[in-house]
Length: 131
Image 1 (cartoon, one colour):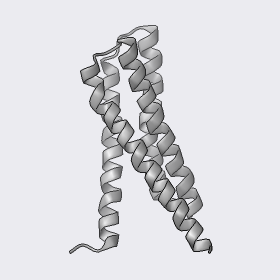
Image 2: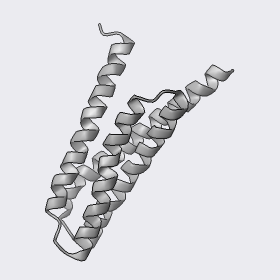
Image 3: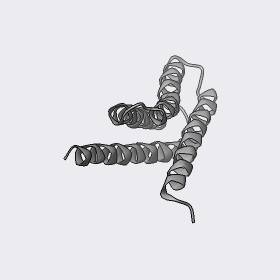
Image 4: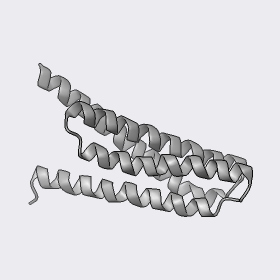
């Protein structure tokens, strides 16, 4: 039976791979956007936010303190939510079909929820360590 530490390590590795895969899928999606002013502007924004999810999660995993971890995880949560916003905008504007976007939108929401829970847990652990 794996220890709690090895479960955490697997979970961290899975999230690192998952956030990177998410960013790559968004990058591929961007290629399908129309070559219009709206398409290019949206493409630039969503690539920044989606790749930031992966990059900042990776940085959070290397945090030197709990405070740094909490700050980085907060950034990941915000960037996942921003990515969801851009995906919603793509759907609402009709730039791409809903069916193409929906799985990524669901995943962005899931990532934001995971990061929010992780941040809340880290804050609670920090506060209990102070007492």
